[in-house]
Amino acid sequence: MSKIKIYVPRDSEALALGADEVAAVIALQARQRGIPIELVRNSSRGMFWLEPLVEVATKKGRVAYGPVQPEDVAGLFDVGFHNGGAHKLGLGLTDEIDYLKKQERLTFARMGITDPVSLDDYQAHEGYAGLCKALTLKPTEVVQQVLDSGLRGRGGAAFPAGIKWKTVAAAQAEQKYVVCNADEGDSGTFSDRMTMEGDPYMLIEGMTIAAMATGATRGYIYVRSEYPHAIAALNEAIARATEAGFLGNKDGKGVLGSGQAFHLEVRKGAGSYVCGEETAMLESIEGKRGVVRAKPPIPALKGLFGQPTVINNVITFASVPIILARGAAFYANYGLGRSRGTLPIQIAGNVKHGGLVEKAFGVTLRELMVDYGGGTASGRPIKAVQVGGPLGAYVPEAHWDLPMDYEGWTAVGATVGHGGIVIHDDTADLSRLARYAMEFCAIESCGKCTPCRIGSTRGVETIDRITQGDAQNRPQQVKLLRDLCDTMVNGSLCAMGGMTPFPVLSALNHYPEDFGLSKPDRKAA
Image: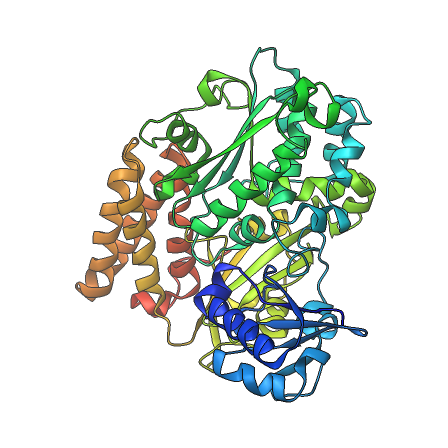
């Protein structure tokens, strides 16, 4: 009798909701009932309200059940779920679930489907096709593919990835580096974590392609310490890839016999938010305190240990393999304007169906919050949504139908950032959220520049005077807050201090009543 494949995720979100316990009970019940199964610990599909999501391979395709608790397992076996039997937790064929069916998954195509650390599984699903293609091209042709795809940095700055690569490739140095910024510290974001835990070879392959294109021979993945499962998955995947010749310098012949070595290792960060800024991250990797460096010189010319360095975030590198495998035109065919390709968007906050949605640029916030998110978990009306992380703007309903793209959102004061959106219902007090932004900056600032270090503390005090002080003095304090924000935006050394005013000003512009103002003190964007 052939074994029945049953899938239980090993993603952190699923583990937190009891996936290990569910897997253990499934194995026990199958053994006691004499049912031969193969239990696969796959990655998450990104539908967190259904975790732990258990899937069973049938002749018609995978059938899903969720959320499954240990006490549900015996009943599932009783109805023959291992053969796709009907149950109240049954969701039908996984591929037909609306939340997944309507997505355009390019980067997350394998998520939830494969065993994350199985190299055979990865290769069976188009894994390493991009690297193999890259090795047939000249380095300049690889860089041109990335340029032509229109891929921009997915970490927040949206700088064209190919230009960074081209700069490093042209630099003359004996040693070059490839560094992945995996210090995913923005509230409400988790696409990097899901990638590292759920499809680590995709990141490794993207970084290897970058190394082949630029002449780098060493790479680092800088992961925050709060991601122990990601670190474990990466280390296991790196070891297996090295053994198989996809990394390192096997038999002295380089990566897959290319003649060029590429050694990769994981560096664990200590949880400082500012280490998500690329130059502070470089300081941390070098063993120093994470403090922002002044630019120029840019890291592409003088980065890690003073050498030319490609720095991209996880999703940027993870987007590269499919670009090389299927061609730049395929990827660039998704999106609009200068925002090409797809973006894994993370829906969090007060939302009914939190999770990950990968869509081409052009999707709207209303589609994400209502069609995918299902509205608020509280059932109350949505009041505001913060986009682009804790330093992103609060977006009012007037802009919820605006297609997502970098330039269009910038025009209304919003930033796409890392693709995180955090939803708030109508009980949210935007003045308190604005105060939190300033307080967050005061705590997390590296302290190197005055506008960030001092400005954030003065910002907390000023917002307190607006909301708690004399009403007659309020207009003067609002003007003072705006002047302070202007100083931080234009005088800070990095985005930490430079973007903290964004949530503050957007709250003030769009929700003046929460600050005790009867009308806006100026026209909002």
